[in-house]
Amino acid sequence: MKLIKLAAFAAIAFTAPIFANDTIIPVSKETKDITTSLRDKAIKDDSAYEILKSLTTEVGARHPGTAGEKAGIEWGIKKLKALGFDKVYTEDVKMNGWVREVETAEILMPSYQKMVVTALGRSKSTPENGLEAEIVHFKSYADLEKSDDGSLKGKIAFISNRMERFKNGAGYGSANIARSKGHELAAQKGAEALLIRSIGTDDHRNPHTGATNVAMGYTAVPAVALSNPDADQLVRLMEYGHTPKIRLNIQTKDLGPIVTKNVIGEITGREFPDEVVVIGGHLDSWDLGTGAVDDGAGVAIGIATGAFIKNNVKVNPRRTIRVILWGAEELGLIGARAYAKARQADGTIENHIIGSESDFGAGPVYGLQSSDNISPNALHVVDTMAAIMGKLGVSRRSGNTSGGPDMIPLAALGVPAINLMQDGTDYFDLHHTPDDTFDKVNPEHMRQNLAVWTIFTFIAAEWPGSFR
Ligand SMILES: [Zn+2]
Image (tube, rainbow, N blue to C red; front, side, top):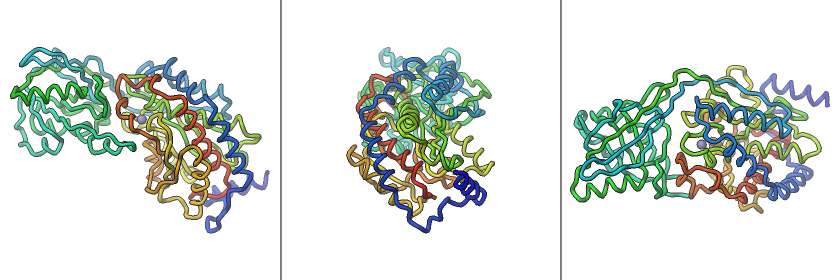
């Protein structure tokens, strides 16, 4: 034991892998056998589902700077300790808070109708009693770009393009620019406010909130999302030849500097305690729902995976499993950026052997992708993981990955990553809406996630070779 520990220290000092990765180290039969039996037990285990139930019921929404966020952090610490993690701690993260207070919209002309809207992240307020203006319709962000600067004085710019539905969420990126940068463009064109169709695939009367590209302070003009049926209503009115006039009242508050936390639980590695496998989800959520699919599910899967391995193996895996409940993801990966920056500064970034985040809802996993920077001599290990996951409906997929939103800062510093691809067909029906609640989650899917994540995490922590 002592000799092995010394070897581990030496390896860290020289920031080199434990075994030179010019040799292929097989996954032992014992490791494969343990993994298979863990899989077959996890697929009957409801702990991830139960953890998610507790978080979404006993805490609820967890938006930075609110009492709900504080309660979520306390919940995370308590839960990790209760489930037997070897080490539980938090790291403070400085940020600027923002909250919504009032958000209403009404069509005034041609006939009075209420609409359902929500402010986008860091939206500026309208004047205290709201503003009244006519709508100018653009079918896309690109169409708004084409209009003349200053041409929308006294008007509200309305972008109406609809996000397309795909299993892998591929419609999100292209639709998102209206949400993230539309406010700047609307201001440049002289508009009083920006109104967008929600970035979502549902037809329910729920608006989808979400971040803008603003890190501190406010958007350039009030920036608001309409529910899809309300966006359709405005489009139809215009097809009848009307120019709708609306009243918009948005009141929000910049909280100034606040402190959030990354909450961390570890299963200490028995041979290489300083080498870590990172898993988890983000603890913060938007304020409209209870953050069940985004990202209570990822939090629950991460906690359940660490606890399941700890409580179902005779000795801890070789490396440390670090479950990170990331803070303030929604407002711009704030916790993840602070974590990566600190590890870069203290040199421990090299000890991050591989990582992944679960942040795409609560659907079943169907694919396993690995990042391009994984050592070619470790790819057989990823293939072995996929083979053991095969019984659960998971297959090996091509394509590069950063391993999830909160892994992006670590991936940018060279940390290898894998992506456990979830079926997100319905994810953007619920994403960032009041409908993101526990009842939408299927317990069978949560068991499957636990089994899949257990396979990845156990092998990554137990296989003695390096993914770097
Ligand atoms: Zn998320």
